[in-house]
Length: 104
Image (cartoon, rainbow, N blue to C red; front, side):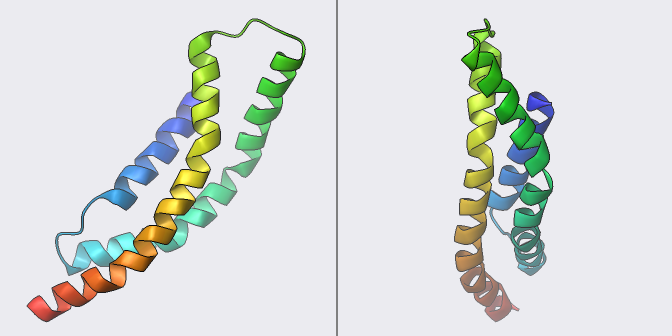
């Protein structure tokens, strides 16, 4: 679950941060930036389950593989990064849209 969620959110980040190269890519990014917070919210139950599981393992000092622990912390940080990038891109995209509109 951790690996799948990490891959999913990382792919979302990659698509959000891809540079726009024309008006169509600006619109696609705007749409994705508007939709991404909902996508993160939809994954919230899985994220909470991962948090709970890792907290329980830590509470009882259960030996957890270092890679799993690292992945757990990474997936905990990804939703906030996605939301930050959405906010940033939403602020940047109007200027990019204007640039490509003027080029037409």
